[in-house]
Length: 239
Image 1 (cartoon, helix red, strand yellow):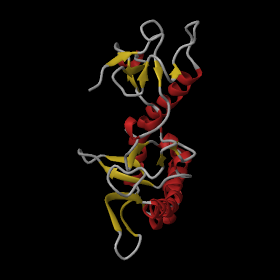
Image 2 (image 1 turned 135 degrees about the vertical axis):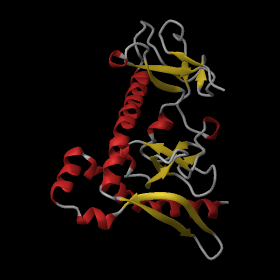
Image 3 (image 1 turned 60 degrees about the vertical axis):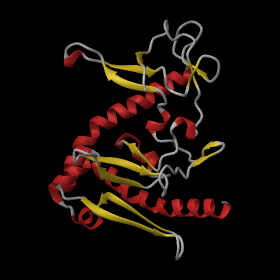
Image 4 (image 1 turned 90 degrees about the vertical axis):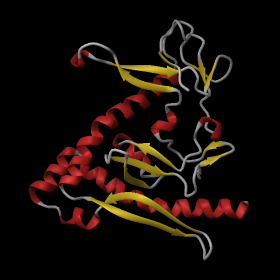
C-alpha cells in the first residue's frame, strides 16, 4: 500500500528517510528500470538491455542478478557498486505535475508516507530547522529530475533506434559450469553491425540528437556481463 502526499516543510518538518540499501527496502531485484540520463554512469557498472512492457513499448533495464529476486550488488553492508540506479536512489519519493493548464504544470515531489524507509526518529532529515531543504532532499530532487528528464528522452530515443533498425533481440545465455546455466529471455540490445553501417544523414541525425553516444554506452555496457558472472560465482562458492 502507498500513502502519497505532496511534500512540504510544514506537515513533514520532522520526516526522516533511512538512506541505506537492503532487501527490506525492495532492493533485492534482478532488473531495474533505468533512463538515458543515467546511461553514462550505468554503463560503467551494469549491463544495459532493452525489454518490452505489457503494452509492447521498449524500456531500458540494468541487469543486476541472474536468479529471481537476486541483486548481486547488494551485500549485508549495502549496495556495493559505485553508482546506484536512480529508481533505487529515489526511495519513497516520486514526481508528478501540478494541476492546472498543461503548459503551466510544474513537477512536484510527493512522498509515500507508508514506505519502509520513512521514519520520524532515524535517517536523513528532509528539512533544515529553518525550513529549507536538507542536502539529502536536494540530492533526491536531482535524482527525480534525472528520472523525469529520462522519461522524456526515452520515447524519442527508442523511436530513433527503431527507425534506423538498431534494435535487435539478444540471447543472454550464461553457463557457470556444466550444471549451473542461466537463460535470461526477452532482452534486446543495439545491433552493432547495423550501427557500424550508418552513414550520411542517418548518422548525422543520430549524432546531433545525442543518441549515437547512448547507443555506444549500451554496447560498451555488455562487458559487465562478465562481472555478473564473477559475482555469481563468488556467491555460489561462499554458500
